[in-house]
Each structure stands twice: as C-alpha cells, then as structure tokens.
Image 1 (spheres, rainbow, N blue to C red):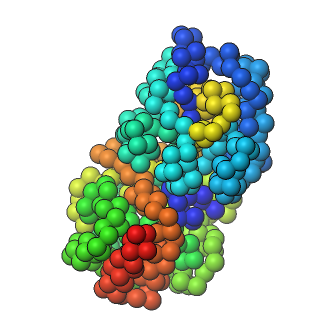
Image 2: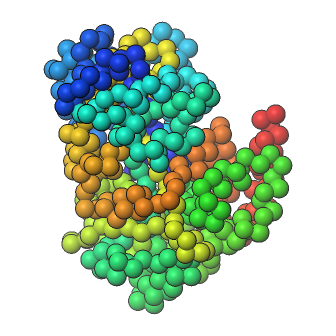
Image 3: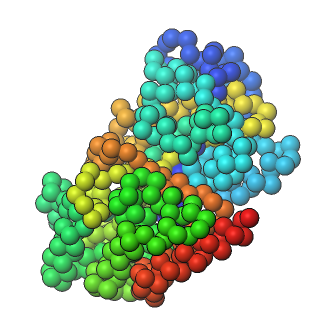
Length: 435
C-alpha cells in the first residue's frame, strides 16, 4: 500500500545541522562523520524486510563502522509518528525520525518541535553542498520551512504521481500522451470502445480518490490553488466557476462510465490488481505503484506514466512529496543524528534507493529505475512543484472535511454542484470551530 496517498498525507523529512556540519564539511570524497557523540536513537517508518529498510540498514552499518557512533534503531513502521506525539512531552524523545512530509509537518514542523536545519544545507557530502544535492525546486517550498524561513527537513527520496499505463500495450502514450482534458477524454473513449475499462480505481482509498480533484485544481489555477481554496475562512472561494468546472471534470469520469465496474464497492487492492493484470488500462497513482504491483502485473508489463492533463495544454505542474529525516528539537544527540541523515545523501545509498527500493532518490544524479523514468522526466521538466493536497496540513481538514465529500463526488453519490455547495458549508463550519 502506497504510504502517502492512502493515508491522505504527503511526504516528509529532515536533518543535518550546522553544529555538526562545520566539522563535516572539510574536503574529501565523503562526509566526515567523526568527532560526534552518540548513541543515536532512531525511530524508523519502515519495517524489517521492506526495500527501503534494507537500504537504510546497510547505510547504518557503514555509518557505524566509519564513525564509531552506535545507532539504536527501532523499525516501528508507519505508526512511528503516532508514538512520537506523546513522547515529545517526556524525556523519551528519539534523536531522529523519518516519515512523510505531512506526518512530520503535523507532529514536528508546524508546532515548531523540529530542529532548524538551515545551516545544514551548507554541509559537504562527497564534495557537494547539501543545498546542491536537494534541488532548490524542492527545498524552497514554503511548506518545509519554519517561521524563520529555515528548512526543518531534508528529503532522501521523492514521490510524484501521474496516470500509469502499460507501455508495451500503449507505446504511443510514451511519446505522445494527451496534453489537455479534451485529449484525455478522447483517449478514454478510445479505450472504452475497445472493450477494456479505461480507468481502475480502488474507491475505498480516499487519498487516491482525492488525487483527481486536487491535481486538476492545481492544473487550473497553478500551484497553491487548492491550498488557497481551502484556506478561505469565508468559504466564498467555492463559488468560483473554475472550482465548479474542476468538480464537473471529476463528475464526468463517473457519469461517462470511464471507471472500472465495481470501483465504488471494491476493497483495496482489488482494482489495482485488475489494472496490473490488464483489466483496465489506466490508473492514477503514486510513483510507488511499479514496486507495489510487480508481483501480479501481466507478463511483459512495462511501466510508464504521464501527467494528468488539465483543461489547457500548458506545461503541467508536478506534485512531489518528500520522505526523509527530522531531528526533534529535544533530541539529546542531535549532532550525531544530523550526521547520519547527511550520510544517507551519499550517492551509494541514493543509487540504492533507485535500483533496489524502486523509489525516486532526491539526488538528481542518482540512478532511476526504468519504471520511473517518465515520472522523473515529468518532475524534472515541471515549471513548479507542489506537495500532495497542495501541502494542506490543517488538523482534520483533509480527513474529516474534504475527504468524505470528495469520496461522495468520486463515487457518484452527489453531483458536482452538490459537492461544491456542501464543501462551502463544511469549510465555513471547520474554520468557525477553529476560532
């Protein structure tokens, strides 16, 4: 199960501070990791046996051998930040955690509980500054900066999304994907006429359902459009004709019969499996989908993707989410923890994320698996990027306000007009309750 969208959350990270890094930056082919304290307590979002866990475990082994710093790691899984919330009020605070951006933002970033890492971007890793290894397109996102304008996280891997398909069946889509909404609908009609379901969707996963509206909203108004929409305490933004148009586009997918039969009553991963086996040609999903479906994909399946187009043919923006490390402000061994995080930016481990874990490394010079090359091209060529749900992390908004109503729209239970009207009412109440 993809860790970000199914939890209706984006992605995360951060780590490496100036104190440790003044000593880290002196020349050499790698980052110096000596002259620090420890041991480090690390609460990981991965469980033993997962591809990412194996890459990080290997890096930890190398780090311990090179630095002499012990790393006490707990492979807790996705609930690690749930355990972090109560721990922040005790002396049992880990030195470093990794998670998706949205989870870390809620627990550490937004409340000001994360260590500022601005100086860390000047640290040296194999002859390059961290600021050069984390492209400015990503590091400059206001969502990953604290009140002082300093980043509180550094990603070690990226996630993006798109419309995924089998390039062996649709080689034309590799070179000439649809550029606008009309072209996308024409493609859906063509697939439908062939007797195959155009789009697979597991309708019980709110994070997947919401990709359609949030992506189209930002395609229409630019990065930040969805965030601006939901930040309006008056709710008046929902009266904008452009917002209704986006909702109508989503409704068109439902009313047009483009979604696989049973999507509205399925249980994940039934429809994802149907897509992988060739019973549907397209699916909107994150860049984890190749790794997640390879065990049941049809023989000869060649993964590829293209950006979901909007109403116009202008260059599409790209969603990106972060996964990585954060250092809690109360960490007892912050310097050593920051060194560990920096260590993961070495090319050896960045390449391993691509080739072994089949995810997108944050370093632009790292290896990218064939299945993700088109996704990486889309990400690299996008004029600007935005986080999943446009970086909206208002407590409970996505889960309790937007998600349930968006589900009803996508599942065909309410019309686009009803969706817009009910969202306006619910949003006004949400902000009223917040005071």
